[in-house]
Image (tube, rainbow, N blue to C red; front, side, top):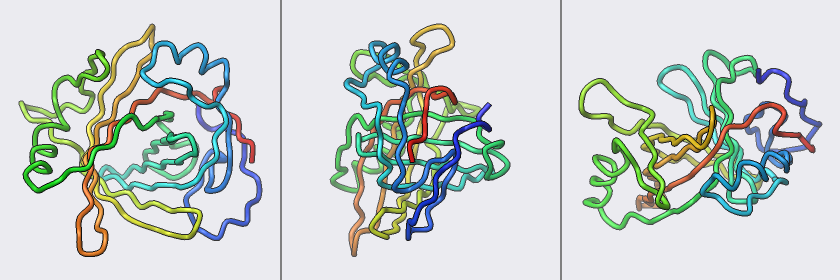
Length: 215
């Protein structure tokens, strides 16, 4: 399904960031405005932009052998592309547009342990009077968040790494349509200190017809 995305144009990017589907650092794309008008009333997000400029790219290598690419835009959003078994468009299994909902600093070790051990992963998560159900359930009573490390490439040449502890939730918003919720504890070494925060994002699925690469 995802093998027929528009190809990317040539670029003089100095940063050797990952690319796929015509999405690349410094490039731009458009989400179908009609798609946004139809789905946005059912979502938590408001005033989503259709035009996006990619300002950073994240890459995550999963323990399962898969990969996640994230293309961060100027609208506090990112396109997340999940691949399994390879790095080509034929290996894409999921594409979503995510929007950051809330970011809170974690002040001390006790708060961080509570976040990672109990707050991130719950059977259900409440947000804006909506109930989301946990997607990644393990065998038994405990479903710990998934640990991953994201390598992020920025336009100015900066490259950094962030350790993340992530759980995915979703709720039905129509027939075969879902709004997704991602809760993440993020930890990054900054000098001699650890910068920790809780990040909440909401997103929805994209299909090939929903996105156009501008360049």
